[in-house]
Length: 186
Image (cartoon, rainbow, N blue to C red; front, side, top):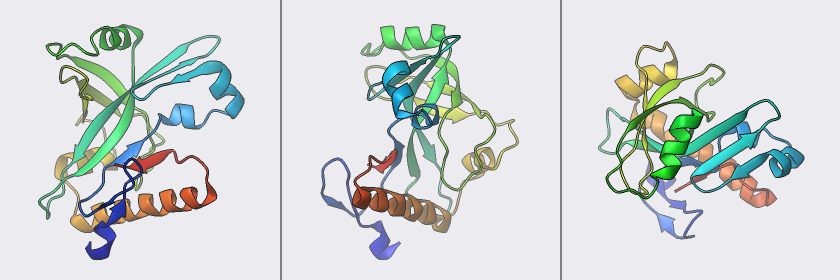
């Protein structure tokens, strides 16, 4: 990627040479809320999000996903959100700091990933890792979606670099406009 691998971290402000992770500050469900609804219906923390509608409550947790890059030694890392059932969400919250609690939940991927049409629902297993390490997302293989095919078959280095550049471009534009980015680079 040459010069493109150099990026300024949104967290520490330092220049990094390695590929950044593409992360989202919140699930798309939260991003798409009006400012008034964010204030009145939603609770967003670093690792949890709850949106309480009059007739239902949506619950989300922050996770990681590693995308294989077939012609490179590094993977493309994502920080994504999934929705969980009330029972799974409560279990996750109750055991958030438990070093020995490792379980698998069913969830739905809840971010619009650059390079994909994410109109459909993508089911996934969510594997907790104990303690406060973010869970890992494993999409269900049987779903016919380009993202699933790429997850299991891998993507090229050129594709990974294009995604990173697309996100860096959006983040750069948002930083210049001083609006809060809805995704960032780790």
